[in-house]
Amino acid sequence: MKLQGKAIDAFLKHPDPKVRAVLLYGPDAGLVRDRADTLGRTVCPDLNDPFRVADFLGKALVDDPARLADEAAAMALTGGRRLIRVRDAEDVTTTAFTAFLKDPPPGDSLVVAEAGDLSNRSRLRALFEGADAGAAIPCYVEEEASLGRVIADLLSAQGLSADVDALTFLAGNLVGDRLVARGEIEKLAVYMGTEKRVTLEHAQASVGDSAALDMDEPVWAAADGDFAALDRALARLFAEGMSPVPILRATQRHFQRLQLIGSQVAAGKSPETAVDAVRPPVFFKLRPRLVNQARRWTPNLVRAALERLVDAEADCKRTNMPDQTICARVLFQLASLARR
Image (cartoon, rainbow, N blue to C red; front, side):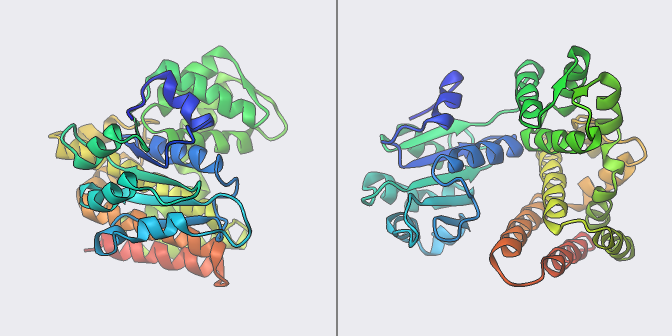
């Protein structure tokens, strides 16, 4: 089944019970992640529930194709439906999904697979589009008009409303990545404090120079490969009581941005041109750093970084290890990758 337009929003709110596996793919990695989260919460409101949610990378299915059916057939010890999240699904995982969609195991579990920008010739995409028990949902970069409606909803969820010119500014500067947009609105909500009406001045102050916020300092240091700056930034944030999880999520957003820039460079654009197309626009003082990062971080390195960040966030929530240690360890690992 192939979903498009308004049918996507309807499906995300109320998935067809006949569908046992959903493929979310496209160039907007943030929208893929955001829609996967929305869909997942229809199964299990707590996406970090270790009993009802299985979360692993697609490459695990290459060596063990049966794992998909095994996870889907497993019963949750605490009761309730199970959610199986497969990240970075690619064509090499088609064999596992073919077997699953041909004969889904008994039960009501839901598989949500996240992928990058799959072409029309993709075997995985064709499989989901043609399967009765599967659904394929494209996630393309949103136009400003549609993103404006999304931003209004995000603001409303934070108890905020906005002037028309503020919404226009936000939509124009946040178009390109739904997850980045969500993160910027969360920052804006913190910036607003007790005020509830967002003006253009509020939006410009919060989003226009958002990269300069303290929480992004360790992110940029890690991507630069600057051990000393990273150590100083983390020490300061942890001393101020900052939770490691928002830092990890900010780092994920930064590397998803690098992933988008990398795809444009692979399509023939120069790093400078690709960086200038980023939304929200990069603070001018940070532009040279992002251009250098775009040259340093190859698609394979970015993919490896995102995998480590996903694992680190899961470890913060599911293990007894100190979360500050987990956060610092993965950011220093990324800084090491940046120096290769």
